[in-house]
Amino acid sequence: MSQVQLTVNGKAVSADVEDRTLLVHLLRDHLNLTGTHVGCDTSQCGACTVHIDGRAVKSCTVLAGQADGASVTTIEGIARGDELHPMQAAFRDNHGLQCGFCTPGMIMSAIDIVSRHGGQLDEATVRHELEGNICRCTGYHNIVKAVLDAAGRMKVAQAAE
Amino acid sequence: MYQTTYHRASSVDEAASLFAKGSEPKYLAGGHTLLPVMKQRLASPSDVIDIARIKDLIGIEVTGDAVTIRAATTHNDVANSAAVQKAIPALAHLASTIGDPAVRHRGTIGGSLANNDPAADYPAAVLALGATIKTNKRTIAADDFFKGLFTTALDDGEMITAVSFPIPAKGGYSKFPHPASRFALTGVFAVKTKAGDVRVAATGAFQGGVARVGAIEAALKTNWAASALDSVTVSADGLMSDIHAAADYRANLIKVMAQRAVQAAG
Image 1 (cartoon, rainbow over the protein chains, first blue to last red):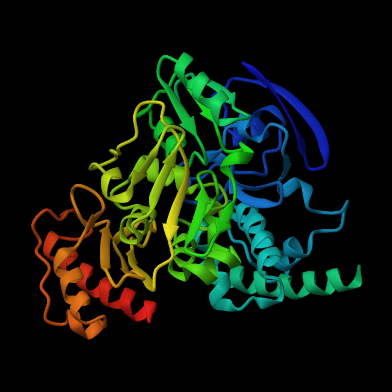
Image 2: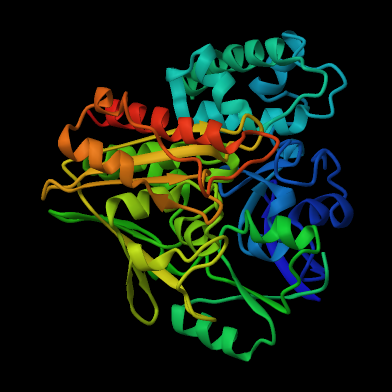
């Protein structure tokens, strides 16, 4: 057992976990943040995507210990109170989810994509960059629409700040 | 995953001494091969020694004739390095094709090379560019480093600290990615060195892991042009055959990927 200390969604947290604990299990089982999903458990589907120090990673392939001292953001940490994050709002408005299982990972990856590419996003880029996130409903068309819509909203929001 | 003990090393020396104390230790960098294998219970190290945050292992330096990438530098950082893009654009391109964005945020060049997966991308670059592998004990030439499937010249406990790539006159990489895993079904790195030598390495194709392709090198040495390979036949001997591609299909892919690599190199 080891104690890990990290920041999750802006709050300092600590937990005693087995050394073999994966970050996704720390989040779900110890911190009750069950928005982050375990889909394939083999680093392929992206349902477990969270941000570590601002970068999208697959939390099923990171030990909790590796995140010690880091700042982690999950799907629960992106809205401002009752106001959805622009990416969440765009997914809702564009019907970018069907069963919803992949959605938290899609949104966390999509925010990462927009922040890395800024205004340079086009449909081909979004489709290519989402290759690490799998939707078993195959609802990619509206997911891509949502990401492009959100990219515009995030640009506007950034300009307003 | 079986029980293990996690350690985070703050220096190369500390990592090596932790390694020496463990019964069946493993170094952990990005963990994007080791952790999946541990989850499948195909590996059960007594200790994992996290080297990903050792400052001396992170960073990229470009001098007049070489690009040196420290071992724990992520694929994402190599792909997006303006210095690498300028000095060896094919190397930055190669890094940008590994896995997916989240994988590239964690995976490291040193981890990829130490693992020597027969379908990994970096081994093709290292072998074709004639890079030098630096470890905490010595330097190893690319031609002496790869020893077969998942096997390298590294001794037990020896750690890659950096890889130094000579800047070539021309270099290109092209791969036919497995559509699900993005590993190379066949990938070819083709290089014309500043001395006029031609080195071509293929990954994903050979049963023994990355290897140079003499027939392609000979044709390109005579004429550095994709068309120079039109009449070349690559032997299927020693190539992998699996549900994704038969050996003769991979043999043809080596030629086609080599032509695309030469076109990309200009």
